[in-house]
Amino acid sequence: MNIPNIEKVKNFFLSLHDHLCTQLEQLDGRATFMEECWQREEGGGGRSRILTEGQVFEKAGVNFSHITGAAMPASATAHRPELAGRSYQAMGVSLVIHPLNPYVPTSHANVRFFIAEKEGEPPVWWFGGGFDLTPYYGFTEDAIHWHTVAKNLCQPFGDDIYPKYKKWCDDYFFIKHRDEPRGIGGLFFDDLNTPDFDTCFNFTQAVGNGFLLAYSPIVERRKGITWGDRERAFQLYRRSRYVEFNLVWDRGTLFGLQSGGRTESILMSMPPLVRWEYGYSPEPSSPESELSTSFLIKKDWV
Image (cartoon, rainbow, N blue to C red; front, top):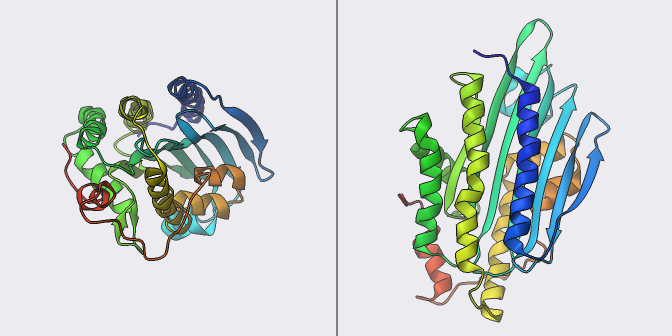
């Protein structure tokens, strides 16, 4: 097994961070990212970039972080007890995009690397990441495109990779207390450390580079659709599901908060506006009801 090249991974993440921000600014066509660089008292730091009040994106956050610590937080040792007593480094790029137009879906992506070390023992390391799509109004064309890009980037790494990581995404991004998926899925992988470092790193790069190939054409197709109060109200209502998942079930959010991470960066995934409505049910056969009946289901799109 190859020895992990931490600096090589970090350089890719920094380059990806820049590329994503540049391309999202071009997609929006008006707004630009503001950057805040930060340091973490316990070790490490990062740079958070936020775009707000764009003509396409109401809010987009793209974050790079590289944090270090002398001991693992409880959430990590519960998941991986062999990490107890080890120092660690965690780095990655994460983004969440909340468009203004309800016909443009929200999307999330991240790629990350983790390594835990202890004197006299080999390091424990892995990659993780993926991307997923959360539409408010479903389009079969968009769902097929999204999953086709995901499948194609997985193909060079084996026929079983896309089905495995698609299912993992469907299972992970599931709002258990609502008994419904958060969106139409995509890819999710974690604890990736086989068969060797180079292969795992190459796959992680393919996922990071593949996100815009999957998302940008959807934005271009939908950003010009006219919308009004009805669509906006439904978008804000559905955003509440996004918030519920991130605060109740997301492992990354929990790890960040328990490890003493920067709260503003961790919670950049929150939408700028959201609403909860008691006992809401969309009208039968409406576009709003079609989201649940035709799209928020586990389905093989390709």
